[in-house]
Length: 185
Image (cartoon, rainbow, N blue to C red; front, side, top):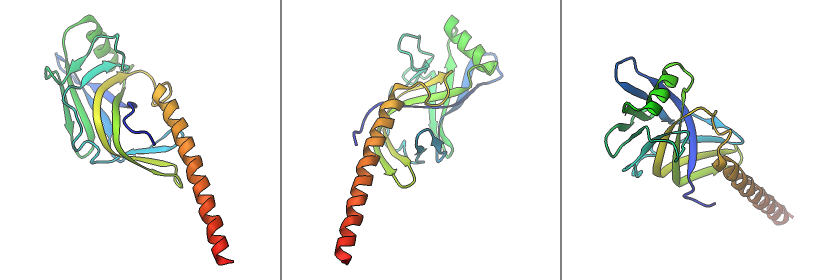
């Protein structure tokens, strides 16, 4: 299985009730299964030793959209707590940020996503479950308007890899059972 490919996940975000444009939410919720072709769980220790030195907050992971916030200038705060990866972003007063903020306030945008590479994961092909044990690098957290996984390119590639790995697993499992039967005879 190939490691260190960027992956994206979606969660929830909300605007706070104050005069500045601050949004908060969880970009990651630990031990919360998501099932889309297989079940995936982010381990509560996944961010131990994760590179989060310069994380951007984006809209829909778009590189051609102005950044909403960034850890480097401290407009984006990331906190790992018992629940998951919490974000707090202080948006500067720009037209695009006001539009995003108002959309979050109105509930039009209420999901978050994160872009990352995996350092370690475990697959349980019997249960069709992937557990992400360690995240290598966090690239961005994003306010998104698209439901969990539906349009991400990485989902399609990851699902293909999963299917190939599962086929290999089934083939090896069949061969093992065949050998066990031969040993009994």
